[in-house]
Image (cartoon, rainbow, N blue to C red; front, side, top):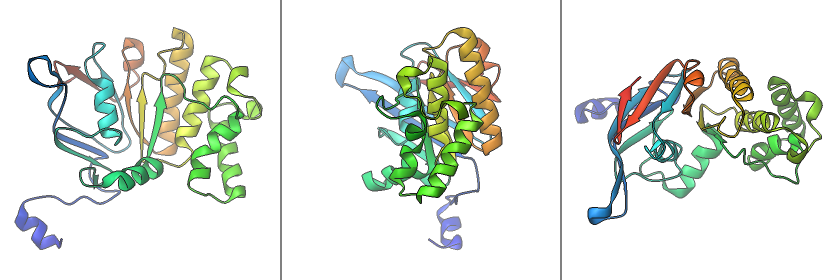
Length: 242
């Protein structure tokens, strides 16, 4: 579509590096049908500017994970639109979504999601192997990421030999390995004690700044919410600015 035709159609065409990192408009998602249907999201709309760490809060079952899965291309909405780094997710197809998740989105989960038989360094290197990165470049990036999260001396240790906080640091390093434009974290401190959770959240904020990443982080911890640039609250399937 040419610039003139897009203007004529009344729609803005974003390209990577321009506009908000995330644009969500009129997003709807329900589970089930009929009277028993659960309406998790009811016309949710918001933008996330580039370089911000935005926290998403809401009661358990409020739809936070559903929203993160939709923004991350892990699920499809019933209606509305999602644009990530200039790319509208609708119509990408499974191959396009896979490439988007691999190349431009990093994920951090509450359960860490590390591979038990791999060392910390090998876990961090998984996304780079999937992209078929050159071995030397991969090793250098893995070493840099482990140093960034303070685990340079633990590269050879497996997840079972690390504390919960250390495992989540490895997960953060892995999520950043491919230089994603967007980082999505679902309750990243949910399995950690308060002190360790705060340290991990402060680390996450620091690496977001140093790597120039935009982050959307779901958390229920009021102390952690204070570290965000902005807070969005999910209430009754709708977004309320914090």
